[in-house]
Image 1 (tube, one colour):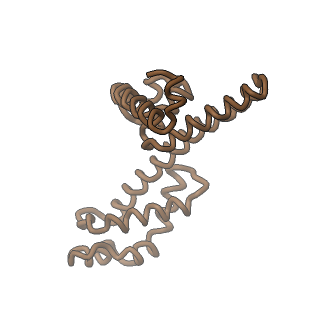
Image 2 (tube, rainbow, N blue to C red):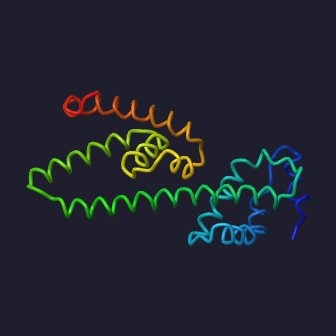
Image 3 (cartoon, helix red, strand yellow):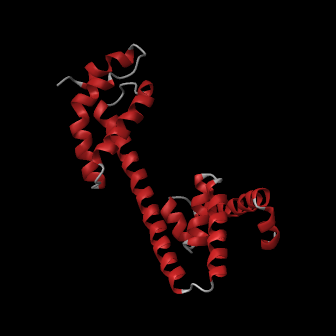
Length: 190
């Protein structure tokens, strides 16, 4: 096994880290870290993502620390991001299951069902045109009915950022709705 210094000699020449060699020598350790940090089922996907990020950022590794320290810091960030996404997905799927159960219980006339399906398609069409941040804020607040404090905790941002972001996201939602579905926007109001 080569030392981290040997793997960094290219870095000192301005070419970055020899990632092929680093992968061969450190992929097992990164896999172990992923498993311990996240207990994830998709360990190999996460390891691949870690090395993809390392590939993109290899010129930023100066050799001031060990290569394993650098890879570990990337691994921690990737695992944290995946866990946040999984937590959000879990919340959204819980809402979808509850909504489906509610739809089955409260179905009225076929016309009511059709109108509800149309409204749902329009809402998600507008949400699909929004940034991930705006979409997430609206879904968590309006559909999941989470309080701003809960959203702040899930997204790891301040409550003030949630409030400001939510206000702006609602404005963007209204603008997209008005420009793409004016007939519906007129019925909904400002």
